[in-house]
Amino acid sequence: MMSERKNNRGKIEIMADVLTLSTVGIKKTHIMYRANLSYEQILYYLGELMSKGLLEQGMVDGTQVYRTTEKGREFLQYFTRMAQLIQEYPEDRIQLVA
Image 1 (cartoon, rainbow, N blue to C red):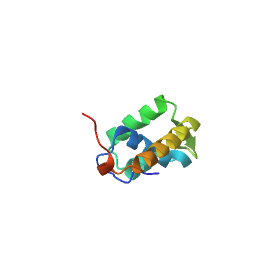
Image 2: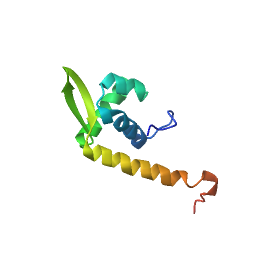
Image 3: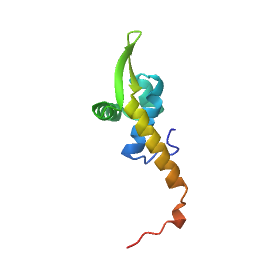
Image 4: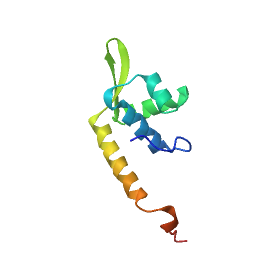
C-alpha cells in the first residue's frame, strides 16, 4: 500500500512505502525513484530499516537488492490496519480536547 500523498509524508509513511516496494526484492535506485526520495534520504531510510531488522540486503544475479523481512511484513500489516482505522474517522468529526 503506497501512501496516496507523496508530499508531506512522515517518517513512518516513508518507511512503509520503502517496505512495500521491497516485498519482491528491488534495487536501491528503483526504490529511490518510485518512493520519490533523494539519494541522501534513501541511504538514511535503508540504513534505518536494516538496523531495525525490517529490511535485508542481498545479491541477485550480481546485483544488490533489498527485500522486506518477515518482521517488515508484520510492520506493514500493522501500518495498513492503523491507516484503515484512521480513515474511518473523517477529520471534521475528530474533536481535540484542550
